Image 1: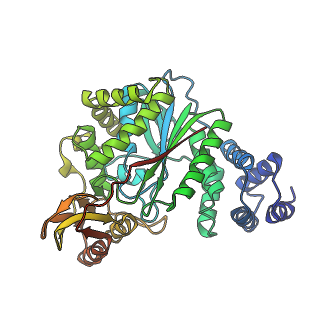
Image 2: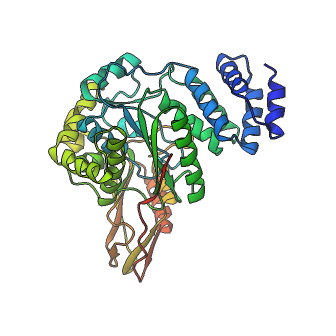
Image 3: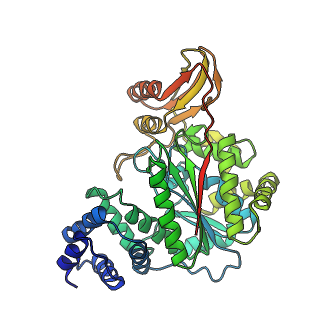
Length: 435
């Protein structure tokens, strides 16, 4: 394959054939296409884009670069959920146990956080001794016992994505919607699932700040899934303020456990209910969303999802006693409150700044190799629309470093706005995207 001709073709706005895309992915995965040529093609794609067919072909080539999970031995419908990430976005740790307890098989391959958005693996690893690096054999074993498993991408699944993702990170091509779509969907299709629910975030705390960009990403991923013979739906959801009250890994896991026990914050519960309902419909458990929402309420009230999560923790090497004793999670040295400077209503909790404040505390990473402090973060007692009085506590910062605490507290002051009048309400689910 003549890679310079391929680069020139895309640079000049040409449409790549399925064969050309497959040859490039195979060559780059194998090592016959060097990084400098792959970088040039990625940059050409960044500026010229890929149409729906090209993106689907790229996705399938990335799936074929490695193994796919063989779930034919499981009788349940195989349905997963994926979020594009946001501040306090912890829905996987609630939705997966509920879906598994309801009768679905949930083979969830998750990722780590980068920047101000958190990652599911980082949250899970705040559970003492929880193992997210499962072999395929271990992954199957946990699925058989629990009907769900949550682990990181193995070397066998979509290895082309692993290589291309690292290259995109250092060539300023991360923001390309076709490349984002192919990256996400290749990992999900390699799971061997029947259907997928996508939670595409839009707003200041999301990767996609503008609704139109989130819509374009959602539509492209749905198109890829349908072209691959899968049942796929997407929700575009609000990320203008943090989801739930907790931001920070161990703090978010505790909030998920509280939600599974029926005591979670209303916005987190509402979104988990909607995502799980979509999964139930895709999996054929219900024919209407109304019935699926009722199923969610019933399953959650039964206590089975919390038991399921406890089994997953035990099967993946973690400490299941965290379900009854939250002090077994990593604990921060200091807790300091931020209080309201006046009376009124919370008008804004600017999500990106809040996410960056949590990074300053140590809850996030600026580089892939940055260390995470699982104990630190922020817990909000007031959300947008809540009334406040002077001196009333808005949030509590959990910190292990005094200098970091002072910097994060100052950032939070600029992220919280209080107004005299209550702000207009904003829906949590902004749009739905289907084939």
